[in-house]
Image 1 (cartoon, rainbow, N blue to C red):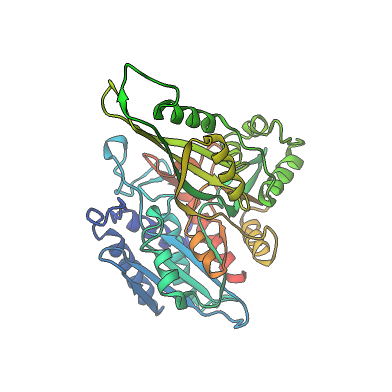
Image 2: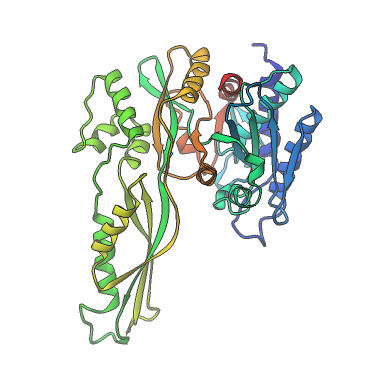
Length: 437
């Protein structure tokens, strides 16, 4: 197989970026300068081919770089193409390949960031250089954003830029990034490529039960721990109803028609299990969820504490946040206080339109039997921050992988890896999307 320069650079840049340790611990005291080094690396390669850049570093070590390629249609809304340069921490003892070694073994590239998401950062860097070298002008402006701090909520990356440097994204109407684009089995011999058109909102709640501290020899059902335990048990056992959002409805329609299956709300979890690992992702996106994750009470066994506390993580569907919060308050009961800690609201973008058509055309040019299928991401990306600018966000990092390769399962895992051939495919499809989108 003879590789194009685009494909060669895509693989090379992904490996180079993996070798830059840009772990985001969430603590400014321990993060180091990895994100800035990665951003400077990207900046140098963009400027090498004549692309002007803006380097932004709100605090030391949290560098991002933005570049705009002008399109041929000045009336077309710009497309934000973004990838984060930070990665989650690693425990090297859990890895069989060095997490920052970018080793290739048996056709797989190993390293932290191989799918989350230095793969896309390397690919879009290669595509930007390919366009600049070849004189290719996209139809619309492309705003390439290589961002810091996504793994800790984008505080010093996308969120800071939206609040403080919105002019860098002037005219943008849509954005493309993680988490989607990877292939999953549709039917024998055919693949579906998931397109994230919506994201659940993410939030936290503090539940607090109060009472009188006292000796453990005189317990009462109204003591804080029993109160809190009852609330936590009710919330943990509750199953919210299935909601057929536009993304879920389209996914079930496409997979149902291809497989000759009629999906029902009553048995949806069991029916989705038949789809394998992709079914579990879709099941997580089919309803609101609230999961108790932290419990705190007392520190001595013979003392009844005066208060007990739990933290609940919730994931809300688009237009479902108010219903979720009301239901959690009801389940907690009148004697347990419920306090909101933080939230990132859900987002949703159209599941049809010219941009979706351009993605599908570029995909089928490389995989004629492939089909792009919308889904709702049960997690968060930097698209939530760009939504504050009125930008519709999509998740599509094209990767054609073997049917048994669970791309979603690679996120934050030990021995994170991606097939090398998938990176070549990603570069070709991504270039096709940007050319015509």
